[in-house]
Length: 351
Image (cartoon, rainbow, N blue to C red; front, side, top):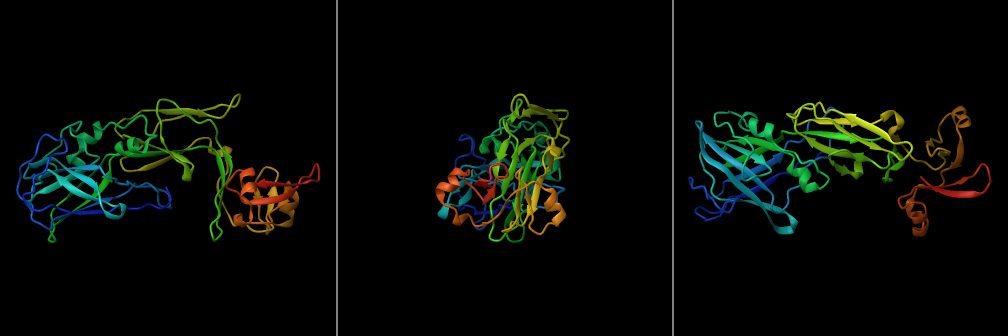
């Protein structure tokens, strides 16, 4: 997941007494007036991961997105499933406006969830003190999409909740916590991640082909070479399976996610068949091996002698490679001419 970004959206409430329609276009909740200047902040708390690097999953809100809000005081629901909707703003940014009227009570607790639905799949608990319990039954009953290959379906499966109270600055700050879990699925790969500055694109040496998922479709994160699938932790014992490879070498795989709410869980399919991610400083003079791997020019002479070297890197600046040459070598390249051992002819190959 690389660098996790937090999305903060602040919107100002419309003036007192403005008439608005509800998200369902039917009901308008009549509640106390909201003073001008009351604002709401919505943040994504992100997923919890055991890996050292941060994760690159974030909810990107666009025009038309909606969150639902409840206001509760002393076990009594003052506002039920009030809707806040994102609308297009200036400079391509979205602003959020209430659709309907939301109760204003400094003693009330406000519970928010995303994404908004007109009818929740289970009842909320008005006696709960926090969002976890308030939406407990809803989270258990939340249906994730089998087909999450489309980003809209992927985000619609990601149920998030938060609670807040109006502070001294007349502001509500919702920090949304993920109630579902995320399964990362990776396949055998060998990827060189170059540490050069300026940056050089990654070099993918091994990549699984013809990947098939049985009965579900995850969201593909191409830049991270993995697939992401949101699962409901309450759906225990649900196996995920599929295959990859071409005939006659088709590899079957299957696992049962063991997940907790708000966590990222990585499943490496046949991990030992690839070397994974290799950090490498690409230098002129590096050795290019027959299997496509690289060997540093600073490697011990004995290591170089034992390796099947077929070429030496002579250029690490892709700008010095012509467009036609790049296309012939596969598009994104870090090229080297190498001496073919059998024919003695000079050939180029993309690395």
